[in-house]
Length: 603
Ligand SMILES: Nc1ncnc2c1ncn2[C@@H]1O[C@H](COP(=O)(O)OP(=O)(O)OP(=O)(O)O)[C@@H](O)[C@H]1O
Image 1 (cartoon, protein in one colour):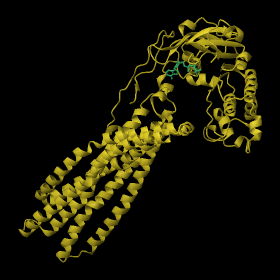
Image 2 (cartoon, rainbow, N blue to C red):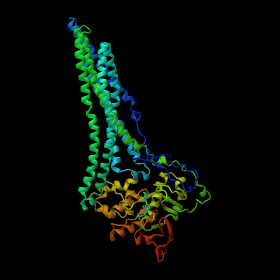
Image 3 (cartoon, protein in one colour):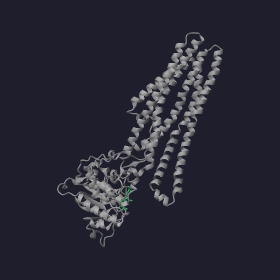
Image 4 (cartoon, protein in one colour):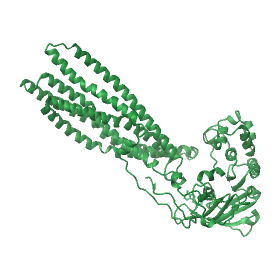
């Protein structure tokens, strides 16, 4: 199920007193075929061209039975028929060439629509507000980006156009049949209409089955992603069998839901064969009797039969089109559910220029702190405050340690500074400016860098990882970041130096090395403030000493706010902020803050 945000926060009252939580409901907007047509916007010219060609192909096809009738007439009446025969051959060839071009154009357009759609999904997925990622599973999002868009392409590339052209051919064929023999047409219409109507009823359920099948497929991808990303744990816990069963159950669900769609789809061919054969046999019997009785000519009967066979294919296609459109709508529904979610930029509609009333007279010149929290309150969920009246400041070029037990709210403070969320109450001042009211998200993030505890090192080379925050960095800048992060010995040891691949998730590097690569990456763009979540584990004493040296380097470069776990890091700080249960318990030098009488030791 997917949630939908109704409005961004438009808080003009700068004091943000007890802001209400944004309502998020599980409202689902059903898409219909109009949405399917809407996503062809920007591609209508090639589609119109393809349709034009397909119609031309249709006209040349429609002319064939008529020309055949005339040729038979001329032949049996001993009139010259060579020209008619040549014309028939030309029309036949023209239809083949025109249809081939029209199909190429269609498929190319379908592919470019899907390309646009995929780029849009990727762009939006990368810009969601942070809390949205908690509501969706990664594997399912991947399925929506790949498999659902492919389903949609089939609907778009063939169906919309096939339907339009098919209708034209069918209407044209019907007109010709009525012109040749109205009574016989009525018989054909009753047979085909009855079988067709019943088939349509069955096909309507395909959309739900396909939507369920794609949901199960998304679930399966998500489970597989979960197992593969924790493959070491899976292996050590000997959980391969259990994981296989769990993933297998979702694969089975996908299979069963697809089977429902396949069963309904399987009706199309026999239904059409029944309709066409039934109509032809009836036409032959009734038509034969009418020719014998002088009610119609043999040429008209042959022409009529040719029209029945001629519209048989587009008629069958119409059923296919209906089935694939149902599939396309199911896929579009799943794509729409995630692209409809507002991005971070769309949600934050508050002007980034308003000075909150309570800050109007506060001095913002002189030696303002690099970061200041003033009475900040925050909660992820209503009625479960995570931070309450948090106030502290970090002077420029100082080193402040945030300490406190697990769950105290330390990472939440980082998340607020990085604007992953905004405070519910109070203010965060970055260089004297209220980050939520006077700065854009982009401006805030440009001023800071963040090194998370599980510092993500990405697939690629060491260099690619380091220049991630500043792709245009030159060699001197990279060398400086490498030095600051104490990475020189690693670089000189690696066979290809900075150009050595680091493996998936940096698996070719040790935990301490990964952390320092993340620090180098964070320092490269020269942030005003570095937020460092110190690793709690995987550092031996040598690595710990290197990290201590790195931290020393960093404070010379920029302001450092560190979530500290090691006594050495806390002792090196100019100031320690002790946090407990979302409140600041003490601020001061390490000994004072964590000394006897102070309840909570660092985590
Ligand atoms: N995304 C989230 N959604 C809901 N609750 C959250 C979320 N992130 C954290 N919390 C809750 O907020 C509280 C503070 O978490 P936070 O991660 O800030 O603590 P922490 O001090 O960094 O802990 P640790 O040292 O263990 O990392 C915890 O009770 C946690 O369960």
